[in-house]
Structure formats: C-alpha cells, structure tokens
Image (cartoon, one colour):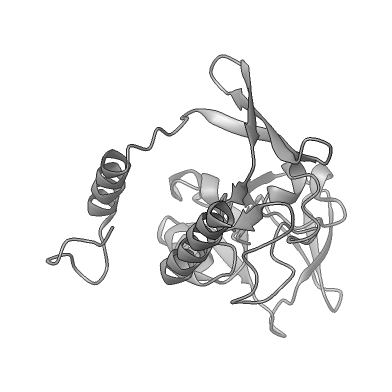
Length: 238
C-alpha cells in the first residue's frame, strides 16, 4: 500500500503511525500487542515452525504452528552496551542512550559519552548545555577507546585515566533474533543478522525468511516483503 500522493518526502511520526493504522485496517491484520516471542523452533518431523509467545501483561503463553516463519524483528531490537572489563563494578551511573532523558541531573558532574553518532553528539551537547563536564569517546588519538574501568576511573587506549560520575553509551542497538530463533543457522549468524549479503539474504531453509535485516532502510524492507510474499505464493501454486 503506497503512501498518500501528498505525503512529504520525510514522513513525520504521527503521519507514519496513521499510515500503519490504515495498513492494518486495509489488510485486516490483527497484531498481538504486549507480546514477546520466547522461541521459534523448526519441527523436522512435522515440517512446521513451533513458536511460543508470552503476554508481558498477564504472563500467559500462546503457542503457534506455521508452515512459514518471517523474522521481521528489526536490526535494532535491544540496546547494545559493549562488554568492558570492570563495567559492572563502575562506581557511577551507567545508562544506554535509549534511557537518556535530560542533562538537568548531571550539572557539575563528569560525564563520559561513548559513541559519536547522532545520538552521542546530541547527548553530549545537551549535557554540556546543562553544565556537565562532558567528554566523548571517538576513534581518534584524543581519548581513544575505553579499555577498562576501575571504580569510577575510566582507562583509555594509551593508558590515559580519568574519573567520571556517569557514562552514557550511545553505542547503538543490536538484533535479538539469535536469542529466540532456533534452527535459524541457514539464514542468520550469531549476531542475528543475515549470513548472505543483499539481495540474497532474505531466504533460509524450511520456510524461513527475514525482512528488514539488510541495513537497507524502508526501501530494503519493501524489497524483502515483496520477495517473501512472492516466494510463499509460488510454494502454494507449486
């Protein structure tokens, strides 16, 4: 279903949500909200996928059986915080950028921002604007990567050490598909991303597919969706 002809090039959030609602209504889709997938396993004897999903509000478990399984959980399902020696014993506050709200509570504190993408740069600016003593880790000779933590001391490549009251990890997100998808090795690697490159990434074995995992944005998702739909249709016609 195409966007309205008068839609802007960059779709605002509210308009995108309205489009999704219209899409659901048009194709009579019935999403299962407040539901988290726990496992998807291929049953070789029955030639089908067995999926378990838990309602996060009631903890009730639903079981689904399907001939096909499409992994469309996205590349950015969970916050990615790198495993740094001493991180769990850091004396200050440690958060991911997804939990960052405002720099108001960090005034006068020494705060380290790890990551210099859009989120990292915006957070660093906000922290500095609210009076935090802000440092940012980039892959450069200035500070270099973090190598380990000891108490509230952060050690960088080259041996530099500095004390910090808080660390904000603006280090992106990661796929969680590999944690719940069993028998998915024909298509995904241990990081939950396709083994094959675009455009041959979307199909695995035993009716397994993936959409939106090729780092190609909405256009890539559309290509995946059409390929998957056509492939499933052809299997019914065979």
